[in-house]
Length: 381
Image 1: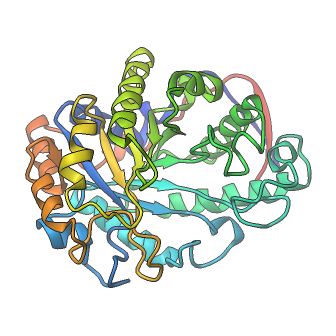
Image 2 (image 1 turned 30 degrees about the vertical axis):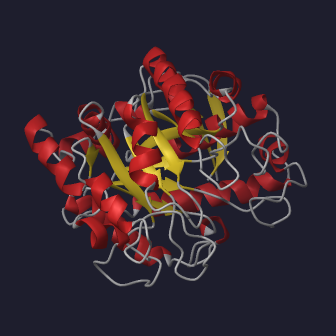
């Protein structure tokens, strides 16, 4: 069935209504209070365990959950019951709701399959972005994928029946060449169209719990250039971010992060956006004092809204990036966590109380009508 959707350029919808608006207001209140610490998949598995309720590698080290927990939506587009890392979507839903009800913040990334070939997100063949945008063979599969993502987001309801707000970070690291939506898969103009198409489609589904994040992948002193090249526009974005990893081969992680985060902070101020360090870590980290010697000084000047450390895979020894009690960095991470500017779950709940912000969305706010956008786009739901 075809629907006609009227669309107008407005401030990002997330800032105007629903539980997304409540989260945006909360994040604004936290931006200058310190740096929230996050960890990917923190409550669903760790280096030595998986799918045990209440567990967390971060909690095991410092006695508190991370303020931010990230989850992966990859493979939801195929109708699978588990994501690309093997996490059941039903479990993910429960953990998202749990973390929200603790007072935590949730961010979601998405590494979908190539909609032309059906292969993974690193398959660059078949011009999938062009096919999606030109209503080619991939367009129907893409719309089905967006419907599945939308249905999952709509199913995130707390014990009061209110929608759980999430930071949604689609099409990240577009400034790199390793994903099908990156520089080898599409032009910057096509990328912008893809982001806007995704935004408008999801908003047309009536979702009021999405805070939109646009995040680069860069450490080559080109953050401003790449930001401008791919940025879809202020009306489609609430948070801007960047992903930078350390590695044995990297000569100056600390300097790279300091430089790029300060560039991003300046851009965020110009665009009146929040900004975050949306992914980082050190794969199989050999440095026992990495958190206090590198990460802390790297973020100290810019003070991003949050830092998300990447995951600790229980079933892949080479896929370990964050803190864990069995790693030699554990004592250093505990020292890192004691810094008063590093915010964990208890800290942000205390700050929330100080600011007088409500963790829950007012039911009347949920019922507000969405702004009427300009322009006409036809979507086949």
